[in-house]
Length: 428
Image (cartoon, rainbow, N blue to C red):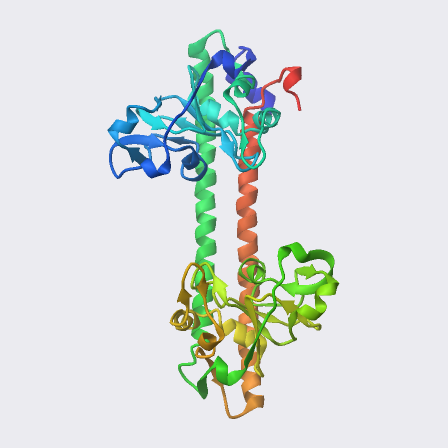
């Protein structure tokens, strides 16, 4: 069924008018509530920041409460109000909507409630469309904090079917909302299933890797990193030193987010005139971070397999040794290694693990008295884990891509369903 035939059937011969929000209702600004005012029980309350982080498109209950005394001084939202977070750090999130379907609740500043007689979820869905976003961008002000005023929101136009017959209009809006609710539910269900699949595959890989590197049987000796090799600390550089073409570097922050178990190419470069002030990892070194926001992040490792040396940040160590570098890096991902290193992490504002701590952590060395046989066994294990890593990465990349595609598909059909003929001034 084409878009037009569906809309013709839905509208049943009635017209659609694009009306300014200011014609449809009034904007009321919230006031005087901060997160520090929250209490365990009391009067239901909504902070504008929670619209960005905790709520989806609609809600009937709040996550937070304030005292009755404070609530008496605050503005209130009622069932069918549209709540809009009118400030954000970026243009995409400013004017994020929440269709309020619950009873009376207090609202904070940096939020507008829109009181009207339309279907609130219909309006909330439309606020998410490209047509609304294109109108909104004209009115965004501010530098670090982006905002849109109530006066400007009142100028934005929305499509209202059969505006002269409210009962008929609400019936049409309700049918559109029903379809979008069903599609939203299906999209959320599929996303949850794909996310669960991704989590399961990662757990399966972690279990298999840890089991393979546990060496409960066979000729193996657990040796400390201090016995196996030496640590070379990097030298400081900052992201302000980055250039398009210069000296290859590994920044400690990139090890958490951008590198896997090994790499042959650096993702960043710094100015060439810094060459003499830097320290370098050589091919076969394992580059390890010494700080992290969590204990798991401290000691995150990547084996450097590039043909040239690479400069490392001063929150990194190059671990130089005579073992298979990928074998060492895989060992550093295991649950047993993470549990052992946790004993030596200094838990201050930033979790830190220094050389004397690293040096005490042990990893398995197969056939310790026969270097050739040991390296062959390490290579055999690495080959198995490489295949498993490649498979897991394929799933890890493919499932998020599939989730993103489903979200784009949902947005496409949402916008299509709400794409009424537009007046000339609204056309992008």
